[in-house]
Amino acid sequence: SVSRATLRPAGKRDAVVMDGKYEIVSLVGTISADAHHLHASISDDECAVKGGHVLEGCVVRTTAEIVIGELQGVRFVREVDTRTGYRELYIRDEG
Image 1: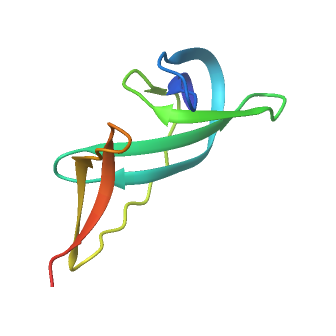
Image 2: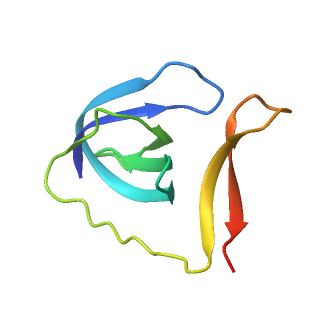
């Protein structure tokens, strides 16, 4: 659970900071040597769920049970996509 969640909603530039008691109901994304990109869903004491891009500033309240898997033979990289202007995820074969 977290006592502070700092998330950026889809399509928004600014973060939303939520202080309180929230349960982490999902955390998904990618972690690589050059970048990370995570999304979280959290629920409040009435089971209302909110989510977005995870940003710096989240504070674990009790525990955060996180399992990380590693894929062999591929490399995750972020490169600027000329169509979007954003650093998008590319999966490169290292075979």
